[in-house]
Image 1: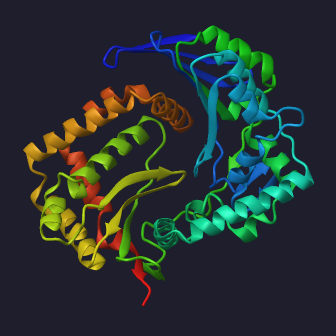
Image 2: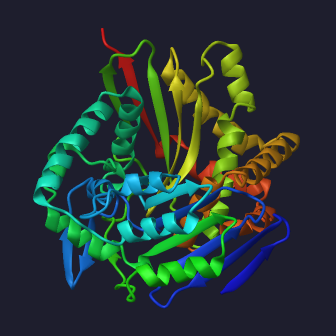
Image 3: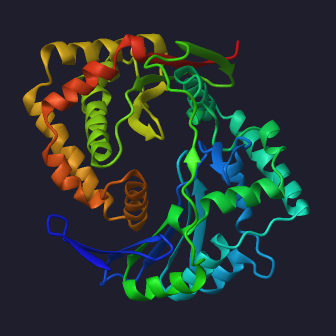
Length: 423
């Protein structure tokens, strides 16, 4: 077991890799009564095509999310009742890149940890339960399709990407989930829910050695083979199409602009690019930026404008949007402001303000056990130690942020998704 100290954060972290390949990260919080466990697989909505047993498998869109739902089924135990009986609150989620199961508790941590490890590592699917779940998830998908906030995002991703599974909704479609069978669920669990493809992060007043003992006692002794994944053909740096427009039941036009960015390399370079991208967004259209202030004072935006930089397997993009009477004007203003910042440079005093705010936000995020666990898990899967962000932050300069804007926030890389009111 490795003990890692982070003096700038005042944190101590214990890391251990078991013989089956499972990475265990324990963030010590000895003076807290609450504890949190996060068990995640590097398997998400974009992992639709992979090689298992020497053959390539194409799986239906939405299967990772579907599998997450079905993992709570066990033959002899009601998982949610078991957590409730031991005073824990549990949940799960599936993103483009990971599937995670977690609980928080103030008592009976190790009993709950055993429940978590056991149900995630024990697949149990019947045709009857799979058929029943199809109706439940289909209803969720249909409700989402009627949500303008979701529709404006989904349309944007279809504009930005031509072949990448980033354009495919994590939940899939009503048609795609009809193709899911117990066997496809077993195949995906066998491929991705292996210790060597997972990480266990525990935060709180817990004993690292005891966590490792529980994991060794419950999880398989073998880690599983490495899984080759296919995320489609290499994407052009430019969007697949420039615009999508749809009429829905909204009172004011909605928009989401996207800028297709160069995917960063893995490892610590990815953490650095994430910091640069987030700061570029704050400089360009954050709520303290000159552009935001001017558009708000002119009544062009109503305070809903917001966005961020996001990184997915083999893809990354900036998105910004909200409600606006004239979305195309806001879209044009964002692009013009990016060009101005590149041409004239970012004001040094404003850059330092954004820098302090960004660093402070990262520090404040460590007040949340959930944020710590997610950041540590995602960092592990991407090849970096998230707790090194202060050192990485030190290497970022104003020129890096300006270069990000120059390369990525251009009309050639932009796409626009609009939702306008029905006539």
